[in-house]
Length: 328
Image 1: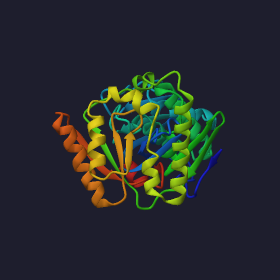
Image 2: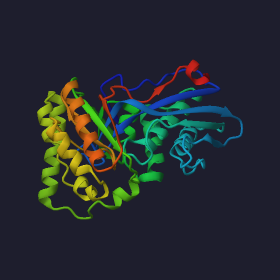
Image 3: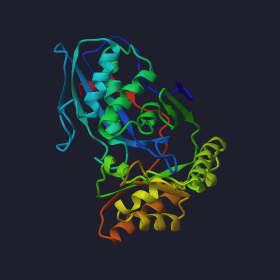
Image 4: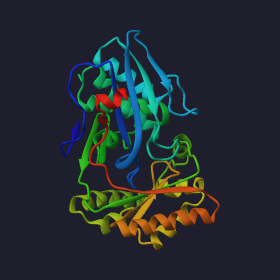
């Protein structure tokens, strides 16, 4: 079930094509205390996948987008998602995929999930769009499950856009939440990689009742803050008591970045996804620029290169690209 604030996506209907492309945005998974349940789509770069029809009945990846990524379709999220779409649609055609990576590898900005979502949308458009959005989401979830575990806090916002709450995976039940109009999000990506599997392995097996209660309160506060457009409350609710304390040892420079961001006026922030990227909230462009400069300087002082950018919540998720963009 998908409960959205329309329009949720730019998914076109139409006749089958020989070739189709789609672009899926970056995202913040585990938004603050929302481990595996809250995700945010971001404006800016994303992953693009082009699918071309073949008659072989196979899924082939011509270009994985990066030399470190597998071209084996059974090990690449784009290939897995493409196969899921074809299987659910009951078609025996084949596709060739070409991936352009706009998102960093193992960077905590939803790179593997974006490739899965873009592939699902492109292949779906290629075959004439016979499935509904919920089915496409399930295809992307299955792809991400093979690579980094079964969760939807990344693929859901990348497909639907905005801020998404994942209430349940079995069955899938996601809700699009309100989007604050003035919120800016500073994304910081240090020159590091952290595999999602390693970050998940660091999570505690047992959590105290007091910690769970505090975490639940913060997640509820985020939902309330979004609905009431209360940025101060949103910032206060960015208090992750579970994943952040467990993963901070894997992220050199994060503590210093937090201190710098807060000193520059950030409302709050945390680790983006599994890391190493982090995000910091600001209420205006001037504050966002100060936060960008401060966070970059904090990493530079430690000898760590870091790229920073200011983004907004992307109201639209994955989109079909026009045919001229596909063939260009």
